[in-house]
Image (cartoon, rainbow, N blue to C red):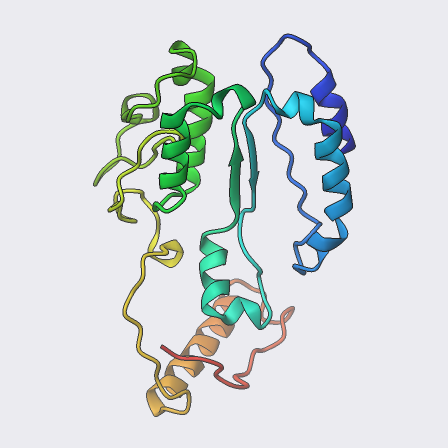
Length: 227
């Protein structure tokens, strides 16, 4: 935070960009965020003038990695769809088209690819029209075409409501599209066989890679959930 504090006051009159990743605050526990509240409050209040002329993104890269909350529906969704907040320069907050786009897109299917397109939009495309025109724009020409659709769209422009993980090139394990899951009895014979098969596969993989003597042999203790 001290680095950003100093950075914002440097290079007066020049456009600048900073990526600041505060990984330790809540990496292992969500409660870490509360201990940092006063530091964030002090930083934003002190730099309000600089930030009023900036695009500000506050975001996470994933949700909680373990624990009871991680195993809930909310924990699952947050892991693949972490926090993202966007603040635009003060002089653009009266642009009805831009604000409408942002509000609509807050309920759209988006990904980190879209954040990249947004940064590109700010640095290159939107600048050409003095940040006043926020109509839909296809960035496939600038960012490259992909199989199945358009992977990246600017969050500052209209995004259609029916995007799929396939066209956004999001692997199945990270896709947040709702699926019809059915809970299976954790004591079901097939569930136990599948769980034991997974444990055996991990042990065999470690042995094959020459790590069998270095790593503890895994044993199945219990099945917590099965779907």
